[in-house]
Length: 182
Image (cartoon, rainbow, N blue to C red; front, top):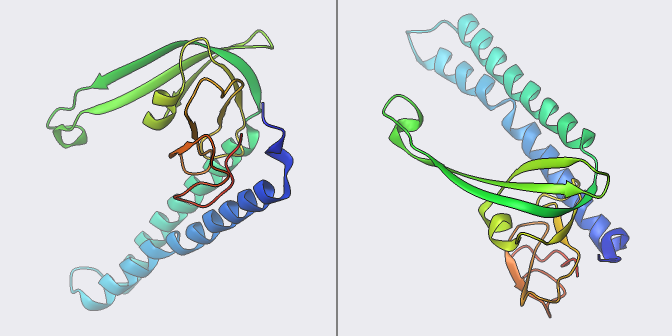
């Protein structure tokens, strides 16, 4: 595994990403309230008091969702394990749910060095990067939290910040410009 996880540039990139997420939440959470207030002010179909109440409720739901998501992420613990199974399923949509669109789901099972078996839903980029038998370290502080133990068999590495594949010789991601974990 990489010894660079604790490097200053990686910690700085993680802090920058976390700060951007917080700023995004501060911007997004009050938007429903503002939108409902504007609608209540210009529309005859909703009074301003009712618009304020609806906007406040929707904004509170957004804030609660962001809080729960942050707490779940903080509660996750790192682990090491081996990829034992990978599965791609397609959930067909009907007219009533998801507007008739199908949904792909990528699942990976890990046998941890601690004896626990874990199942994780992963992105397509992670699914295509991992192979059965790979030793992997799960680092929940990263958006793409899977680091392979042996990267020498791959011609490319997965950026743990944005999930794009990068050449093994690169030191930083050509897309997000964050350091590559080698």
